[in-house]
Length: 243
Image (cartoon, rainbow, N blue to C red):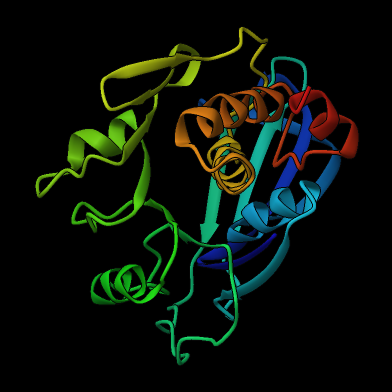
């Protein structure tokens, strides 16, 4: 399997510690730092999870560094602050690449790398299945569009038949049918949509049917939310998901 992946990427930083008191200077918690974790997020998280399924990937993403820093109370697993560093992102400058790909995946966090017009151009250009996870409200109709519930409610233009709506613990809705989610203890939802997108793409290439790909993607997302931070599936996870 070979996939072309295009989208915005970032670096995710997690600072874990203990909150035991409030600041005397303001009614805000003081985090006593214990450890830090850094990982690649957004499109790179999709890349890493596709790689976990054994997919070969070519990625085109922004060169500028977007950094998302989260401060988390380890005892309660509560995020008490997030700080974002977002430089101006140059739009997708490349000519469309040549090559044989089984699918095109677009991970569009709407940070500037993929413009509105480029989103439609890419979707129309690729001769094969296209999977788009986007925060834009104007979307192509000739692709599988993955959105969450809040993103879906913001769409004011044409809503395509191939709309895949993730609903957290409820599952995923597609063409009026709900595909239930696995019941798991949720530690962190960060990156779960990326994991879902990667598994959905793999499942569709493998089975050729979206109704078989969605349950697989649900299982993959359930694994992701069961772990802290931006989680990448392991070989053991993938073997369990594919059972």
